[in-house]
Amino acid sequence: MFAGLKKSAILTCIASVVIFASFTFVDKNISTKENIYISDSDSVWDIYEKLGKIKINRVNTSIEGVSIEKGRNLVLTGISTKKNGKGKTSPQSPYFKCISCHNTKKEFDDLSDISAQKRLDYAEKNDLPYLQGTSFYGIINRVTFYNDDYQKKYGHIPIIKASNTDIRQAIQLCATQCAQGRALEDWEIESVLAYFWSLELKIKDLKLNISDKTKIETAINNNKNNSEAIHLIDAKFWDKSPAHFAEERAYKAMDKSSLENVVRFKNGKLIYDRSCLYCHKNQRFSFFNLDHSTFSFVNLMFRTKKAGMGSIHKITRHGTWPLAGNRAYMPLYPLEKLSEDQLDDLRIYIENMSKGNNLIANSR
Ligand code: HEC
Ligand code: HEC
Image 1 (cartoon, rainbow, N blue to C red):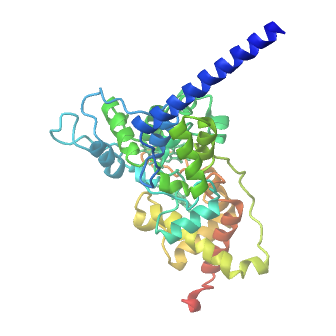
Image 2 (spheres, rainbow, N blue to C red):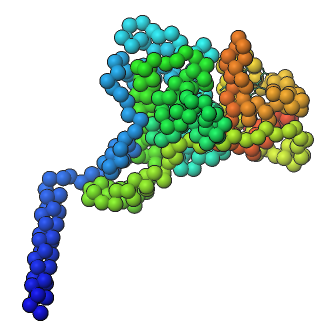
Image 3 (cartoon, rainbow, N blue to C red):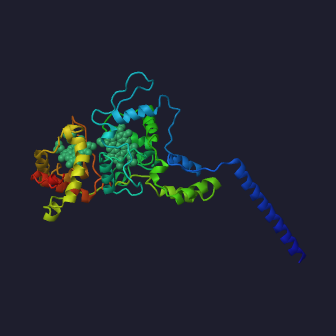
């Protein structure tokens, strides 16, 4: 009995200390800390950091000569001013620029829904090319690179394996293998990375609703439920660019109703114009010329029926290998960059055009 009383007295005492402590805590909070509100222009990484997430893909600014400007020039033109600012570097590649295969703009309206058709629709709406490589926009918000089938198929090659979790290795790999050019020096890689940071995701890209924003703000301001808030942001975009390869397909006659489908024809034209022609028109990045002439379409259809490497069913799924003397190569399209339906749409467009059937000639 006596002991019981004592116990409850102690409990009351502890409780009041706790209450008192939490009052002073709240008080302190109000008096010294201003509440944080999220704005559209905040960077996603800044908000993550406020929630306690450790930043990755950081630039090493201790390397001499690193600048965003040099990185931008390397990516857009293949040349920059030298490390010491005097004169120009040699071109990174005689064949390609990084932007031959990668956009630098956002490629999706909703970054959590990255289907191939959504990407094509967005490219059409925003006048972007439709390419085999993923956009550099938001690349520093990604955690792994050369994912899925790139690892499954080529993961035995050390630099490809290393590239999976190391953005610097991924940049170097693409410079030497994709662009078939010289290796980048450390200050060049770091400059490219610095430029990539200028393309980081912003809060407005995530399309958060008011309730999401409030949850995140409450978590930051109370330093509570931080991992829930982090997960909420995680779900709004892909932190990797998935890549699954498709098998090549044999040539098969196409049924009439598909061939006459105007919507599919239009979609095929979008792919031809925004993807194939981006590199092949006027031999921009390839010695193989393609345009809107009947010859181009007849030639492509001929190759496709012959089912050799120039067949659209093969070239899109395997790409080409660098040839002696001409080391430019065509990268393959994973399903995420060209779906099986889209490949059929391309076929529908090319086959009709090879016969002079422009299904939309009268509609525009
Ligand atoms: C000939 C085409 C081509 C060129 C040129 C090219 N790339 Fe790539 N790059 C690709 C393809 C294809 C991938 C495969 C992965 C992806 O982007 O989905 C890739 C992947 C990457 C990745 C990893 C992306 C990811 O999320 O998995 C980085 C980083 C990269 N490239 C940087 C560069 C840089 C920097 C240059 C210029 C020095 C360059 N690339 C030039 C085609 C190219
Ligand atoms: C990123 C640039 C790029 C894109 C996009 C691209 N190609 Fe290519 N393509 C190349 C390069 C480079 C070659 C290698 C041959 C050369 O340069 O002569 C090539 C080769 C080819 C060849 C074989 C040519 C030959 O010499 O036999 C065909 C056919 C072809 N491409 C069709 C297409 C089609 C169809 C598309 C669209 C779905 C497309 N390409 C998209 C760059 C590209």
